[in-house]
Length: 252
Image 1 (cartoon, rainbow, N blue to C red):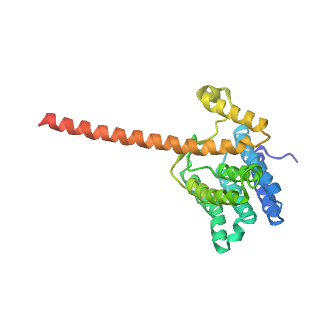
Image 2 (cartoon, rainbow, N blue to C red):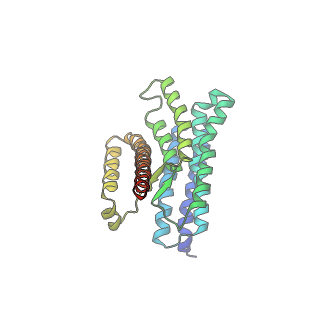
Image 3 (spheres, rainbow, N blue to C red):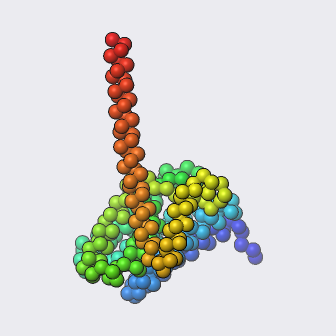
């Protein structure tokens, strides 16, 4: 029997969740690099399910809910369990709490996303997307943790990431969604596509090492743009108040 085209996106979403489960199993067996790779594979399935939904014109509320549940497993539970096994288990109860933040805050962020979602596509996200937070963790572990820095420095940096990334996920900082691959999208956002192309080239040229730098670039770009917009908005509000004050003076 042929599979309904409406089920195809959900199939990729289920594979996303399955990869998250495999990541947890590997972390439990102390195979941390394999666990990190499964989270990366889950990210690919997460990207493909959205593309499949658009191609088959089968986007639905069910698909949105299933996608969020899968994301909590792959980009919440899996990275939390990964960082707990690598280092935070050494901190006892504090380590349990800190390592759980990515999972807990990913669940909060995704629930907020579903409530605020209008339609099935978004140009911007409120807060750092959970897949990007997870990718930041795993690319750091794969290419930097205990490889370039000393072990103590690596642990400290991982501890900082475990706190900052969850906070960014539930923040009001706006992040651009990755544009859909189409000629119209390329013409509309050429700079974004150039940045993505450069990121892919650097990642391939460095054997994957540059992927962590791209994650940091994405994180800081949202922070910088939000700060710029906040300052600009504040300046506009001040100008409006000044104009109103001058108008009142003239009327008198």
